[in-house]
Image 1 (spheres, rainbow, N blue to C red):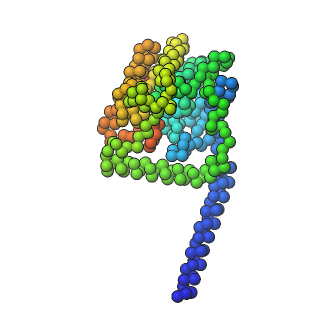
Image 2: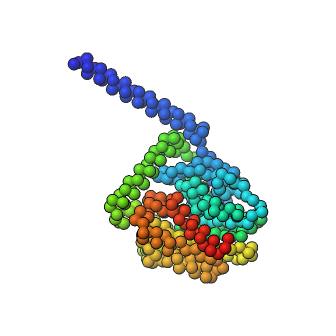
Length: 377
């Protein structure tokens, strides 16, 4: 009996050390891979001056990236203009051009390019060159600058697709400052250095394999659990909708906006700045005989709460009445989808986030393509 107990203890010790050695070996391999094969480039770069910094994508860069820990990783390819694209970066000089402008939604965080709405439009409209100028937190001030630069490089648009995002109001109010003293005309963010440009900590830049595996498991489990819960107990109050300070103005009275985020007068200032920049983009479009499409779309919180206090739809409509642009308002179509699909949130948006997933990107792309097709390609 005593011999049997001793044998069991030795067996458990053996199992423990075997498991320990396997884990040490795995993390060692993970560490080596993270600094060799899995070592990702940073495809963002920036310039600074006394007014702040401007950031952009590096040219001809390929890496794997993750928007945040709860998102899946995805491929990033840029072309020789420093724009996000698919694996095939070549443009045909004999074709007309479509220039697409937007922020992280247009860039397509969490998705390979082919699954973003810009990538889907690119694939469907193969008789055009599509240039995707979308980058996270870009806003109309940057779109105007980028359009001017494109025209200077003789990338003349036949069509301009500008995806106006709810976050653009705050971005214009707080994040982008026109540098009137500069000769390059680049709008800048009034800070010294972006957070992502700072030296990464040891655990942040290593053990990428472990992070990828845990992220994939976590992402799929969270989505499966949430979809199952929605299917079994459908209660909209339990939906994991992200309520944000950037998008709250559509359903929150102006006086009740979060004052730690929206300072006095910033909301109206942001709106007026958008109007000014859209007007300037419209004039450029006219000068170059370009068809200018302005696209607006909802976040999950917009669909859930509605546009009770500020109508993003009416704002977009007014912009195109004043300026010579064609409004594509995707909000009604998203609302229809919501009414007939109880799993609408999971099917259109990343869980607990405002960004469109592959289902939402495909849905928006088809709305835009239908309108362009109706107007005549």
